[in-house]
Image (cartoon, rainbow, N blue to C red; front, side, top):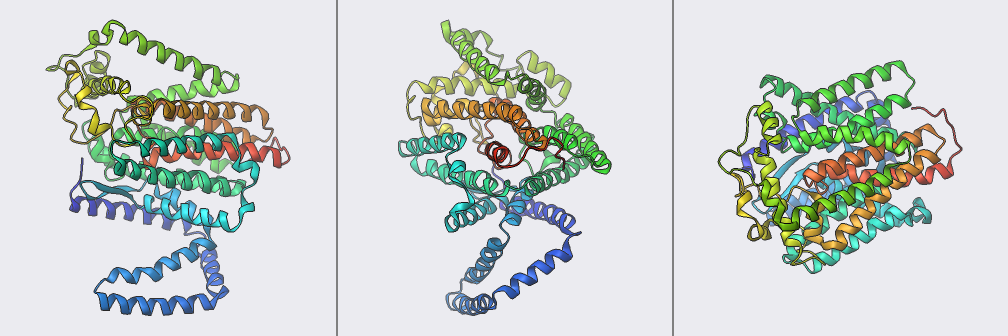
Length: 518
């Protein structure tokens, strides 16, 4: 639901306050070192700051002359670029730290962004792309030609095809731009940064610590509401739109913390990790998100499947079962047998009633999913090759809906989509788009299993299996939602790709050390 300008401003202020608190706490210990580093940068090129001062005076003069004071920001932009060029890794860590704190901000009914992470994504992508062009050897030919990156490139190329043939090219082009800087920020940047174990570990710690700050704030707010199911979304505002988005990101930190515990030998760090894990599990329980709970269970099974070299076979079996189920439901219109009662299918404020209603198919959110899924499946046959175009589902689905599945919320004032990323992909990008996405996902599972068993270094083994478990969790929550294109959950998906690629290359470059810890 679109927020008012006032609410947006309050949300951004709250987010920035929390974000500033986190950054202050995080760098407080190293403040002296950072100050010394900044001094070295300032003395490195005095001519640059002379030019910058002159540019500031010129910009100030133009701003007064044109009565446009935004011009004054130009020198500060150059300063930011210069500082970013000197400390690229720090900018990337800043981006990771901003993810949990970011809030939605709507400039108008049709234009919105996430602050501060989306501008940081764009800036980080530009910065690292420029660095790669300036210093091509930072990424080897083997890295660039990695099969996972090749599949990701194919998927991006097909997305361009679907944008060109889109029913709304402007909306779809916006999607393509956002997709590009997501890949730049969370694939290209980690490929460069994660080559060093210390920076890899630092990135994990920064992102986890930032998420924990938001979790503690949200838990405290939720406690003040008596851990009410009806007030969970209020407790999460402004950082998360709803408990589904929150829990989908939160559950992915469980395997990360377990992996961190297994890799560290310091007793203090182990105790802190256990405490953090207990906080995350408590928050996950009180998130009241069925999809995230299911993802946690499936993630535990995935851990065992990877160890037994069964994850790829399991992935194929699940795909075949889903396809068979769809054909069965479609035959003789069997899906109509499960239509709900419009009058009794409502939202339940009590969570126990909510669970019971889910079991009886009388929960409004579950029924609304069926309503949109059926409409989505019926849309496929009319545009199965290239799809309707990215971000066009909302404008196209209602004529395909089946009235028997209509609910109290089918007017869809939030303009949300089909609540199934796989179905959304085939609707908006056609069958080739879904095939390439499934192929990429399958290849990621293969590499998670392959690298776990090939690597001798404990750090690399844990990196591979953690990426595989997180990927499974993301697939589960995205079967019930469509969060790959969101800033918080989508970033984790692309980070998994980068982790697997870097791990694959590192196990061939570094000597094996079974006792490697952090």
